[in-house]
Every structure is written in C-alpha cells, then in structure tokens.
Amino acid sequence: MAGQTPYEAFDNFRSPLQKALSVINRDAHLWALSTNGYSPGQEHALVPNAGEAVEITTASTRRMGLSSLFTYHIERAEGERGPWKVRTTAYFHALEDETSQEIIAYHWHPSLGSDFNFPHLHIGTGIGAGLGEIHKYHIPTGRVALEDVLRLAIIEFGATPQREDWVDVLSEGQAAYEEWRSWHGSRPQRAQDAGDEPA
Image (cartoon, rainbow, N blue to C red):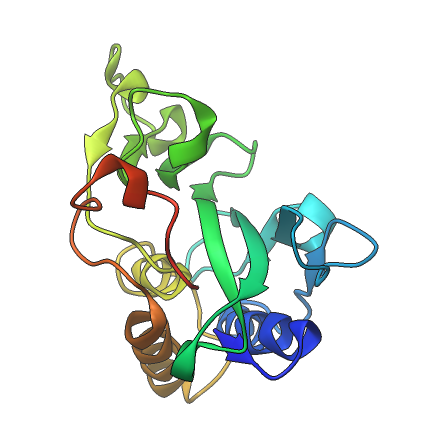
C-alpha cells in the first residue's frame, strides 16, 4: 500500500487487515512488533494480539484460533505506488485447534533460505486425523490473503462472523490487496522477484 509518508503507507497497510480481523473477533488488535513499525529501511513484523492467537467463536463447541504474521519493509516508490509503500516480505497464517495445534497453515517466506520459497500450505496435526508425514509437506498454493483465511474459517470451519457485513469487509479488503500486489499466481516469474511486492 502507498502513502505520502512512511506512517501513512503503514497505516494504509494495517487498517484493512485490522478491519478484516474484526470479522472474527472485534477485540483483536494488530501490533507492529517494533516500537516504530514504519521506519524505512528496516524489516518489521505485524501480528494480531502481540503474537497470541486470536480466539474464534464457532457454531459448535470446538474452539479455534487464528495466528498470523506479516513481515514487511517501508520504502520509496515511484508514481501511484509512492512516494512511500509497504513491501510484504513474508506471511504466515494458521488456523489452530484449542490446544494451539495447527489445523491448516499458509506460508510464504522467500527470504528464509528455504527451498520452499513459494506460497504453500501445511496440513497440521490439529486437523484431527492420522496423516503420517503429511504435516511436513509444502503443498503449493497461489498467493493467499488474510481475507482468504478468514473466509475459509467462516465458510468451511464454522466460525461465527462478528459483523453482519463480513462478506463486504473481506471482499473490499481483498480487492485492495490484489490491486496493490506486484505479482500474481503461485510464485514470481524470476527468483529475484520473490520479495518484490507491495502489500
């Protein structure tokens, strides 16, 4: 996302994500892990609830949580993507069971030096079935927005929406995300593009 100042770029990045989180928990709050989450030239991290899982209410007795983390840089940019923009460098989103075991997780972390530098999915042991070694697999996906994960939690896992307008909130937030991202599909076309994306 772009802004006239580094802080405005950060706020334009954080605000739609904060609103999206309110779909499952109105008390969840997105935190920058550094004291100044909008200083240019540094890597920052953004998490809900200071790193604690966000509690999700479901229609059944099953308890669930959402953990999420974005890493990002704020940098100068030209044209409509500037003069300042947020460039996401990684994301980690997971739905967890009541014991904090991952049910399903979406990762993208091209700068960690792993062979798995493409967006991928993990099926976790919290799914409640004997899966052998499958929880170690990196199953390729396209880019996954936080809004995708929240929609999945509601539609497939029975999370109870905390807003009547949840469909619109998630659709609008995801549309903005897709408009500002710099690459589409399952991975960048060249390895050196892996980290080159605004939020």
